[in-house]
Length: 289
Image 1 (cartoon, helix red, strand yellow):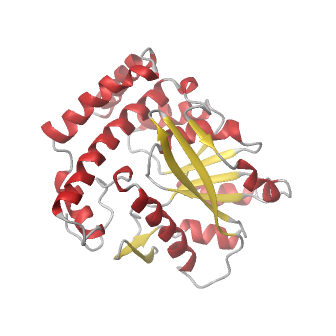
Image 2: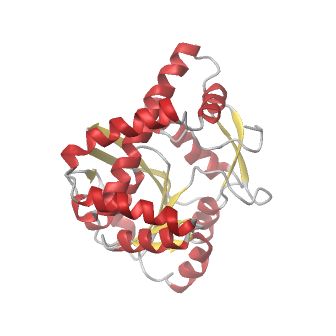
Image 3: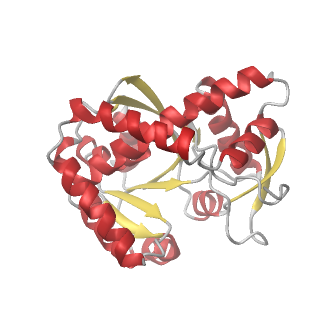
């Protein structure tokens, strides 16, 4: 079954390889119709999440966010598969980093930096387009796929653009081995952690939310400055990232740094609420879904 899923994905990649970016809109419209009208993809999960995040919004307002979310999700799926099918098509014109020089004082002095990101806007294009815009190696920390065929394919495609994909469970050992080399580490930090016992609890959209302990732990242990990628969609097929410093050197109590960057992520989402992954079961610790 896993190979059949991958085979279908590769067939889609084969089609998208030859489809120019300007023609993706047709496939986006079809995907939107399929997800929102036919499959009603995770409709209940989306409703629960929106009700938890926006209790003061009217039903019509939440319905509008939901509809726009399906449009965003459809666009993101098609664009991401296109990026993996043809990484050479994704460059600075599609995803620009506005202030890459913010890392220079740290990297040029031999210090690595840690960047937290979110499942917001088109994060896959951010992975593919980031390395050529920096003068130091970019390491993407990710959770290993359960499908080995997807795993190998995605690693190869991301690597082709100059980034180094690194499995999350290898992160700390890699840091120890390369502690004297200045690198840019990027970690998706908004997902629900699998290990609840060691997670950190914060307030996120007014809800008790458990978070990965990794970003705070790594930042404190290795004295790494922590940054956030704030992504904005400029126009169709065009995104821009502003890099925001969260904490230069964290020495506070457990949970404070996690709360700080999760609050920054929440602020980013509130500005463009349709562009976050509302179909994710983010609050499994307090909701049955």
